[in-house]
Length: 227
Length: 211
Image 1 (cartoon, chains in turn brown, green):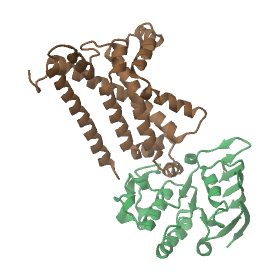
Image 2 (tube, one colour; image 1 turned 135 degrees about the horizontal axis):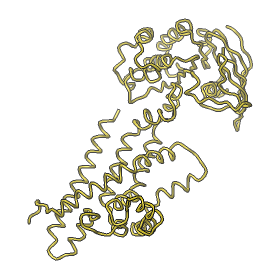
Image 3 (tube, chains in turn yellow, orange; image 1 turned 90 degrees about the vertical axis):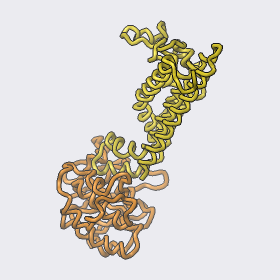
Image 4 (cartoon, each protein chain N blue to C red; image 1 turned 30 degrees about the vertical axis):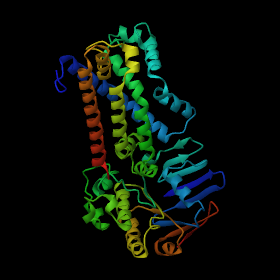
């Protein structure tokens, strides 16, 4: 065994991590765009409360988030029961891992999108309205393209946070090989067994490569869009 | 024909306008802070009047008593802003086509009248102030408005560019059959452009005279 040869179990953890990260980001992006826009453009009663709630997972200990998810989405939890009856079990599945990642990474995404949208000139949006564009058309043809670099940054940060998600995942969906044992969980598991140091090092290298690649790609995309 | 009778109550000033405008160029004339921009923003639907009504060619754009308030995109109003407001992420061509109902329609005629043929594939940030405003005018006209609103479109131009732009603006009502409401604090622009002058003072339209 050397530093560059990955075992089947390690490949499995990598694939699972990518699946969980991509699922989490893809599913939260529409909400991220909506809440980012809402917070950037609208004044309404309870805005501060909503803002606080949306950012809460960023400061709550991940173990607590995992525990709350277990209460709500566990097999006997309110949402867990409903989804289980629909044939979509969440607890102790990769979907649960994606949910945990989504919840924990959402604030990073919203924050980045919100700031990017705040920087888009409202005057350009008004101009588009006078040219006959509905709010929705303005959103997709003016606001989103002009906020694009910030949206990409938000997506990448959320993805990276998903890849690193540990505490709420292990609390909520445990550490099941092939199902919920993502990269950080696999790395942690290797450190718990004698002789696992080399495997842990390999997984650490892979994590670094993925993180570097995501960051690099986002910089590239943002630069390409620059006006 | 534009008929306006609106009031906007703001914390420090009450803006009011009661007037009837026909074809040609009407200049809303007054010093800065008199409320001219607020008035045309209400016409465009960007600011909601406290009460009153706005009617454009039999179509009610706003009526506080009947609870009508058309959003800007349904008012058929073209707006030329002081700062151009071209979309920076689109080429000049895409900017021009943005408000067109029929994207395939010909833009050549307007492009050549405004002298912007050579700019179509450029980005707005590479244009001079005068070029930007000519593109903004073309973009507004191509959205087929029933009226054009201009908010000090020459404020950021030097005098040579002003001279040039004035000659373009002057031609619009006859060429395209679109009336213009033009906000200005410059007496020179009034003399050059106005068919009709609406004087705005301390938030109210105090007189309306043909020029």
